Image (cartoon, rainbow over all chains, first blue to last red; front, side, top):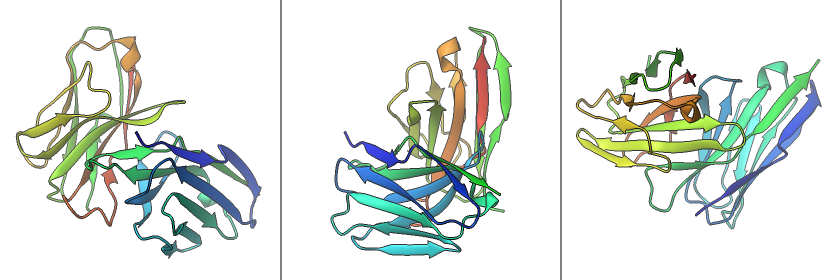
Length: 111
Length: 114
């Protein structure tokens, strides 16, 4: 079965700094999703990547899927306290109809 | 507003007392699913449904039941809850064959079984 490993597990950055979160899959990714979760709350969809080399941006968040489609990165530029939360990557399974999730990266942004 | 609504948000119950967590979506999505989230284990799928009257087991279905009598509703039933079902539960939905906008998740139900 597919496993998604996220790194780092947790991150503390100073406001204004850039940061990157990685998601590595044990198998080829057919659809890779990034979600943000405020502690104990629901998941908010950020973006989805499907094609090797694809890159998408939303406000100050950019996500990329590598050419081999086994790794994705999420980059936040000029972080703000509102970026704090848990970032989760999810991937479509071979059989579809479910997402496998990584364990998440906890982000804290300090003033 | 397009959304997935779960109720209740918080629930404390006793072992063995049947309960139902409701999930409703207003986006006419065919696909609906239940996940549980536990520390160190992440999100795991419990059950999913491709359409009305079509349901199937996910990764951790033991101790749970679901039904899909209407397209918009997908309740999660715990016939005899046990403490190991204490968890944060999420309902999600998406249109079949078009997940480019992601699966939409509800706000979660935090269940404690004592």
